[in-house]
Amino acid sequence: MGQVVDDVKTVYVETTIMSYLAALPSRDLIKAARQEVTWEWWNKRRGAYRVYASQVVAREAREGDPDAARRRLELLSGLPLLDVTDEAINLATALISQGLLPDAAADDALHLGVAAVHGMDYLLTWNCTHLANAAFRDGASFWLAENGYDPPSVCTPDELME
Image 1 (cartoon, rainbow, N blue to C red):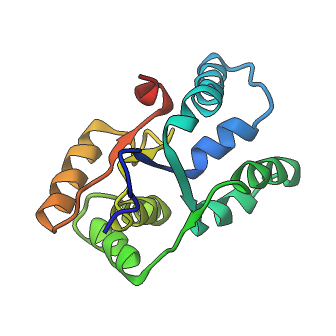
Image 2 (tube, rainbow, N blue to C red):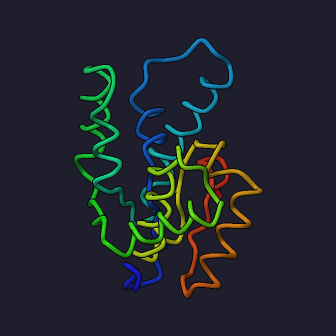
């Protein structure tokens, strides 16, 4: 089911990672700190993993400010994109219908569905509302495991610094 062919762990980067990497330096202290740790992970730790994104990330990266979108897409250009399969779509739909994510978080559910279907070890995100949220992680991980999937560990770049 997974992408792993050796001992190298896999990471699915969700759109917020690309957004923090492509953003102009922020004056907001929290955003600036997230930008810094994201760049540190990208430049110092990314090489320790097989890193993937998906067509969902590419679609979301195209949205918004054209200059920022161009920078996000440049960053994505070197990453393999995982397919959004029917199975991933069905998982995302089930995560919402089970109440693990709200209807408005359909793309977030799809990120998790893609990562689970492709056997990713980690889903890297700064989306702390719907993905990197302790209450959500536990429920979604339990549900995915109960339904035959090895759930990815959802985390932020600072959690994956080692």
